[in-house]
Length: 238
Image (cartoon, rainbow, N blue to C red; front, side, top):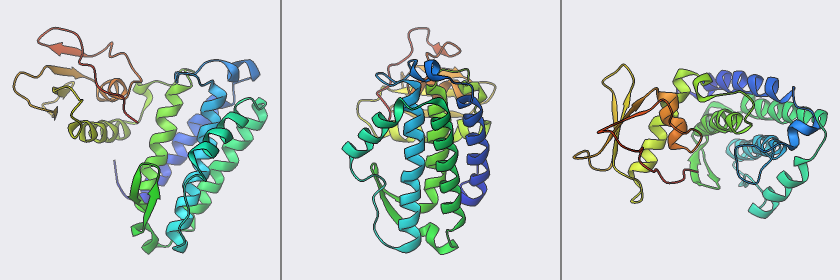
C-alpha cells in the first residue's frame, strides 16, 4: 500500500463508504448493542469515529497553518464527547459520520504540498502530517470490525492488512513484554520476527487474520502454530 497521503485518500473514502453502509442498517436497538470493545456500545464506536475525524481535522489544520492545535481538547473532553454522542438516534449518528468525514476530506484537500512535511502532536506522540491519512484509514477499518456487524478482517483490502501487520510487528518488536514469535504469511516465504528467532514458535496464516489476532480483534482460528501448541499471548496494542 502506498504511503502517499493523496493516494491513500481514495482508500479512506472507500473505507468510509463501507462504514457508512454498515451504520445505515442500525436502528436504536442495534446501536445500543455491545461492540467488541469492553464497555462500549456500537453507538460509542460510531461517536468515537466521528470525533476522531474531527480530531484529524484539527491536526491537519495545525500542519497547514503552523498554529499548534491539539487533536482533542483533553482526554477527559474526548471521553465526554463520545459518551454524550453514544445514545443519539440512528439518523443523528449517520449524519454525524457523514458530515465529519466530509470535514476530514475538505481538510485534506486544503493541504498545500509543503504542509504534509509538518510535524504535529498526536496523543501517541509527534507525527509527520503525511502519516495522518494512514492513521485515519486504520481507525476506520479496525473500528469497523469492532461494530460486530459482519465486517471481518478478511474484508480488509490486502494492502491495508499487510501494512497494518508490519506496523504492529514493528511496535511489538520494541516491547519487552512481547513474546518471541515468527509470523509467516500463508503461501509465501515472507516472515516477520518478534524477539529472538531461535526456539520461537512459527505462527502461520492469512495476513489479515495474523494482524487481527495481534491487535486483539480475532481469535486466530485460521492460524497454525509450529511446533504444535497454543498461540502466543501478545500484549495489548493501542
